[in-house]
Amino acid sequence: MTVDLRVASYNILADAYVKPEWFPHTPAHLLRPRSRHALLACRILELDADIVCLQEVEPDSFAALQEALTPRGYTGVMAQKQQGRPDGCAVFHRLERSTGHRVHHFSDRLEDGRISGHLALVVDFDIGGERLRVACTHLRWDRPDRPVEQHQGMQQATELIHELIRKDPNASWVVCGDFNARPGEPLVRAFEAAGLLDAYAGQHQPTCNANGEPKAIDFLFHSSALRALPDRLTTLDARTPMPSEQEPSDHLPIAARLMR
Image 1 (cartoon, rainbow, N blue to C red):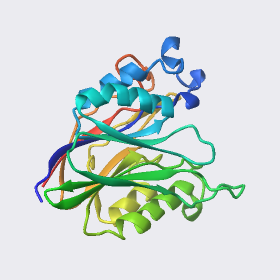
Image 2: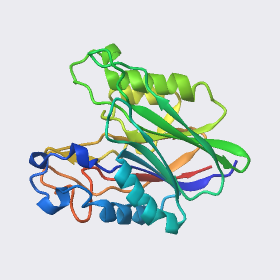
Image 3: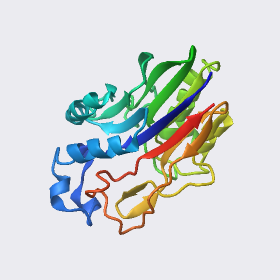
């Protein structure tokens, strides 16, 4: 299989989760609902990616992005979280041969016994007669003092690995999204132990600047048969305004050229 394409992952910041006190350096007009849609569309188009995986996508933002991206050759699909959550994941692509998609809702439960509602959206592609499977997810944040075996993000990561990736080892995989974990933490190491490679290994920089705390929590993993050339990232510090006119989310998009 010959592969040469660009894949991007981007948490676009749901309006429902905007708290102005978390973004003291952001102009107030950018924090109003729906005010960032056009800026997000422009930022996504700047990535020039063949496949774009998005997190914290609300139905109205998905509709706005569809309107902006469809004339540029992109097709999109969205899956919303359960439990009444306002957002979900979406994948836009401009490849000719998508063979369908699957929504996998995780089975982990909250402290009150309800399922968390989080998901992985998996879109399949035919690349030269072989399958490329792209999983977009937003793993749940949990307290850092939670034991690893009880950590909800870790439970979701483990389920994704065992229920999807290891059950289809013959496919080439890309797994990306907001993992709410940092390089070297057990959740991230679980993907490495499953045989996936971190496109930004040895090159991690902060990808998110919420509440004045820059941190690297966005990842793009891929099968070992693929080689990655990751994009360089803008340098963030605690005073970097995000969202801004240039970066309309509190996350930076990450992207890599994948080749085989």
